Image (cartoon, rainbow, N blue to C red; front, side):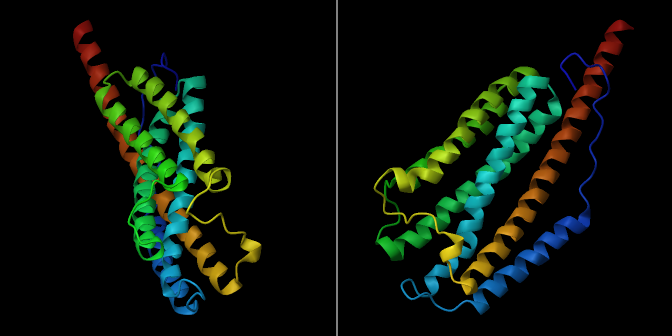
Length: 237
């Protein structure tokens, strides 16, 4: 829907309830499976089991910000409000999982490195990514005009998403306390199964959250469009 399109901004397709319940049950199963079936790591002991939530949280963060990038570009190209609302919904979910990733990393870092926080390249770049998207969401709350809000937030969203590969490669580009990315081919199957199952579970939860937030945003915009149409109709009358 372009800026000049006068077609009614209708409600979206509702998210199916089974998706939410299925994602929750699958998440509970994958957590229990990963914790119960994996032995203590030779170096980190049972502490390594936090990676069953830390790695999937980071993956979902990157995927959500990837959606922000694509949706923001689509909005700037087509001026489709739906793309702007999808970008905003994905940014909210991505920021939440990015915050969880930072907290989980601190919980892992305290017994491993002896400190809660280090200005390590991976940690610092992840914090910058988080702050960019917190700023993205704050910007949206301060700009009232929908089109201008979409343009400005799209620019910030694209900038923030570009930071994702910097976060990913930071452990290879700079000397860092954080370990480099694990190669799935080098991870023991007993650990890899738990990681992959939890990545799938977290991804389903993220899809559910984004869908529901996008659905709510569509209803909000539909109400705004209806109010604007009523006001114009009243003025014309």
